[in-house]
Length: 459
Ligand SMILES: [Zn+2]
Image (cartoon, rainbow, N blue to C red; front, side, top):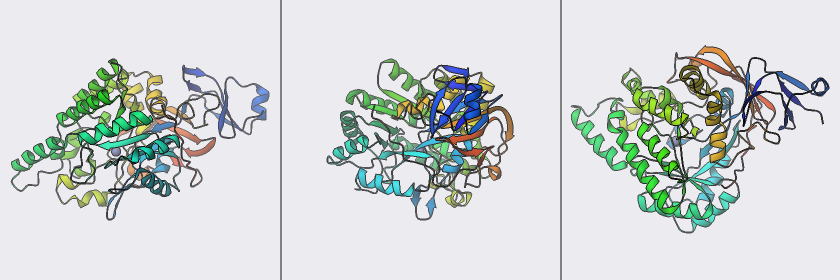
């Protein structure tokens, strides 16, 4: 059987570590991972020279918000092309239910919005309220390939909050029907308390964007993480903690895992690489995200947590609002559209910090971007692995390529970047999705609408 493509001469990230092998691809899938013969290479339609490069599984980003509406005229960019330019071939986004809307309806609506996306995708089912009859729908959604839900412990004012009783009930049902429960863990009452104190200290009630970090100190997160873990322990649910920003939270996840609980966690490139001082700069409000950026101490703790496998995944929480939308905050830190762009720069940022700077094992770096999230969310080994039979989602990674990040040069539809001017090493030289070339040297070159819905398995 002749191959459509053979990746030759690179160091291939296999599940057992890096090996100098070739990867043969046929009809969008990996045919074999082994040295190819001269006649096999002659018979292949294309050869991809990966000399001096690494061949990686396409990255899996389990937390993005593409084309997300948060109010009239407020939408984040659809950055599915930017994802591919950066080496992310699969994403998990979220449904966006209206109050009272059933999970099945919310899923169908979100699926329509994703019809033009360039990368492969799936959705976590967001629950902002709960009715007993929805347990059956969740069961059906899980069987159809969407076995996860998302709960917010905050946003009471927006009507999205899952209070402790609702969390307990949803976890009980998800345990019964094999769904992972993703949780945004912050304590709403503490945010209100610290926000009131922050405002009281400011004469004109406009303390600036740096107040965001003061109104949400680390306690706001780690108290809620502890509570979510307690609820998961009691119900036996599989809990995944999203966008962890503090060392203490990551430690709690590590301790829970040690006890044998089914708990996992992710952090984001911005919590690993950006300081809360960015909020005090002119236009600092454009760097507002939730939870907020932190200090060097937290970043070191998060890095350690990734190395030790207390946290299993790097996710970007990519949510890219234009500077025009960000600038509509009117000087009130509570009214900034929160979110940062990250999906396109994620691999270069973490490669530069991890294997380059911190001497992180490159195999661990690969794992936290691909096999880690793919295993947590039922996509492995179809996604996140270079093995025969898997989807041929592949990156030719040039570890030596150095560049300066500039928003204007990125593929994103956004117009600003928290990483503006940062030097990074490592670039996705070529990115393939199911055997098709989608991006080259940071530019999207694929056909439109290439993305497909990923059917995930229950754990
Ligand atoms: Zn998010």
